[in-house]
Image 1 (cartoon, rainbow, N blue to C red):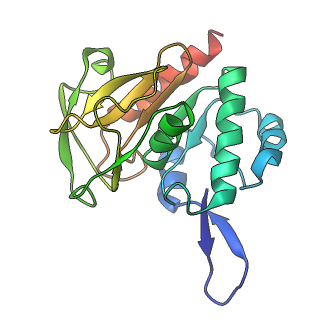
Image 2 (cartoon, one colour):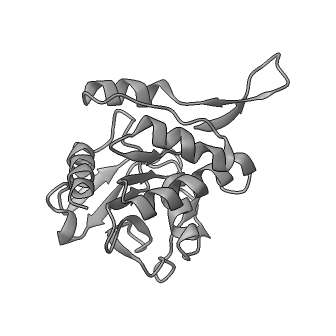
Length: 200
């Protein structure tokens, strides 16, 4: 979840957009928000026993250290336990950096939908040229992807906006599936990740 400051209060709080709650309910899924607890979040996750871990958007990496620590711990646990993972925007960026990739900066991608080229591997979920929403200032440039990841979606400059893990049930997208203008294939991708996780 995001780390937010509530007006009139001095303590930071965890929060999640209602867009996520409505979208997951529409997909007949039950959201189980995980608080930012650092390494202690692993025990919380184990007790929840989810089918999928979503690393959502918001908060640039490095600006909320407790969230960085929490999601780093959750991702490492998911990878070792073969829990399926979907990274969204910040989640994509976090996964790439934790696994050894790097990030660059980009302009003109905030609140401006654009077309992506989708690799044949993801044609089960998306058309060759898919329009997505866009709310990011960081990017994964060509050649900056972690070695364990395979690129599956590209913007017009060949920056990577989607990828999957070469072995694990993990995928990430730079757009936001919780928002109204997201491509319909996002749900198919999620179902595929959950099904792959059950194979381990």
